[in-house]
Structure formats: structure tokens, C-alpha cells
Image (tube, rainbow, N blue to C red; front, side):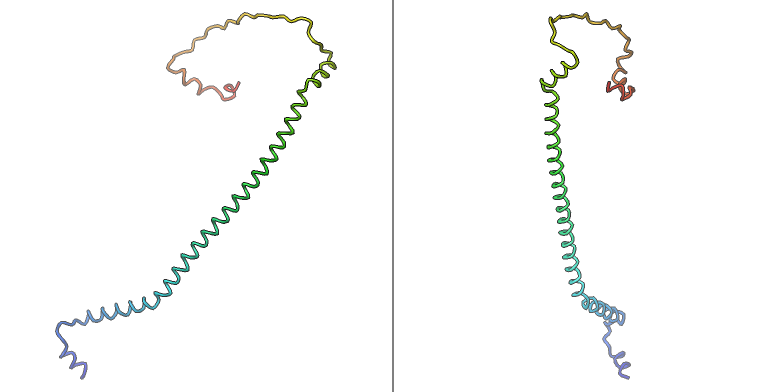
Length: 149
């Protein structure tokens, strides 16, 4: 009877659908509010973890680069030592004493007199080059082996 009285005496402006929707919104808001602290803490932990992982990745990259620099410096030092050894060997092979000893073993001696010979330039037959328009494209069809010679 109480529900029937309320139904009869209820104000005309209240809609039961509006009341039901407001109740559902309030329940949903309370449910979200219940987990808001957990979500915030999770977000803070996630951001902190992401920053920490970025730091670890950057430090490992820095360590790898320092090892690469160290190995490059060691390789450079080894190459410099090898270059110095090879320069000493070249100097020893080019020495005047060694060359004169080799010339003596081969029976070579200093020349008695010098002669100057003049050669006439060799005449080359003129060749027809073709069209001047296509002369710049001619290098494209020459094999690379022929270009080096």
C-alpha cells in the first residue's frame, strides 16, 4: 500500500526512466572511483618503469659505444705500429748501400758518358668520332675494365 500511495502522490515532474538512469550513472561512477587510485598508481609505476627502461637502454648503448671506441683505438695503434715497421723496411730496401751492393752483384757500373736522344712524336691517324651530340654518352657503353687502363 505504501508503494501505491507513493505512486499516487508522486510529483508529476519525476520520470521513472530518469531516476533509473541517474541511479545507473551513480553506480558506474562509484565503481570507477573505487579503482581510480589503483589506476593512478599503475600509471605512475608504468611511467616510472618506462623512464627506467629508457635509462637502461641508453646506458647500455653508451657502454657499447665506449667499447667500440676502445677497440678502434687499439686497432689504430696496431696499424700505426705496422706502418712504422713497413716504413723502416722500405727505407732499408731503398738505401744507397744496398742498391750499390745489388748493382755490383749484377755487374752494373756507372756510365762512362751520357747521351740525349730526341724522339719525334708519333703521328696518330685521325678517326671519325661520330656525332658530337652522342659523344658524351659514349662513355656509358665502355666496360669498366677498359676505363681503368
